[in-house]
Length: 431
Ligand code: PA5
Image (cartoon, rainbow, N blue to C red; front, side, top):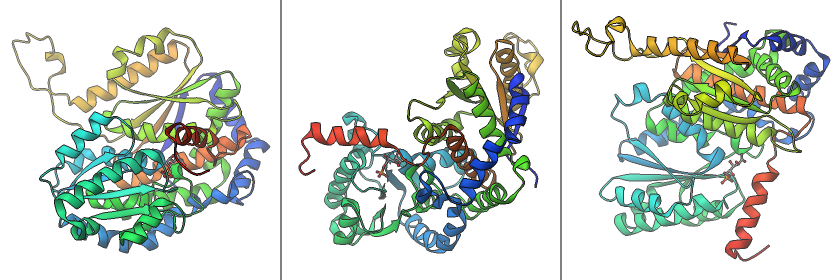
């Protein structure tokens, strides 16, 4: 198999050798076997392993519903938080370089915060638009999306009338449990199911992500193809052949050698939300029992002018993973301006993308020289198959990395703790 993504440890220093040893170790083999054989802590939430394959079976229905909605609306509001929205936003933004040229509905997001003024602005911006709502909550009880959905529902009833409002609402939630399931059944909303054996942060390749992405014009068949191939490779290939495992091993070696933070660095602002999704995946899966690398992310070159100082020269407790897109869209070429008053003539004829790639080389070298182990994750391009493959790559890495750490990668007691406290402080009735 041609590896996409692949990991380059050329600037990782001593950790490169340690990683190769870890890849050969019995501990890693045991971790991989427990995932492949669906054993160990949280094994009941391993449904994401065959989710891309299962979702192929659902694709026709998802596409039909999406196409029907696309023909009626100019805006889809995706209501959800955490795993119920980050994956959609990650893929959407990563594909924005080509989607902006199409004439599909705009996707807006709500229910991922509690800022009153932002919600007010969103509601007012929807006036006069032909919009639909996809409300997504696996539990069906999360406060932020429930609040946004109630407000949106009320606006739709008022502006569209109840019958049209019902046609314009799609609920994605548990098959049987939760307030959103009750609401969807009682009101007669079209609905999709979040599989029981898939946790929120692993759910992007279910209807959770696929439906809104299809409405936006993303080729979900291609996205799934990339994920199916990557997942099959992770499940079947020799351990030493699997780049996702080298990434898990690299992280583990960095952690056991004293790193406290992994910084995911991208030179593409359009990957900002991919990094947000990655932060949730690794942070919620590993950050427990006082263990785990803290996942942080930076957007270069923007953040070189703020966090760049601390990266280069601050406390050495970091490892850094650069995302490099081999075939990124080049963007405009710098025109010639012979008087050269801005001093940029030496760059005339080069594309902004090419200059960006050089910036990545420069920063990786500087940070390595500054004492940070640097790995590069190389991705062929920002097309649907590569993105699907990348999502599956991170999911598999994360599961194995969690196993190496000895935590349950599939629960999130910390998130639940805050939800319960918020309910109590808000005075929610019931247990
Ligand atoms: O990964 C998780 O399970 C969580 O972060 C959830 O995605 C998040 O809390 C949203 O939960 P729900 O989809 O139940 O509203």
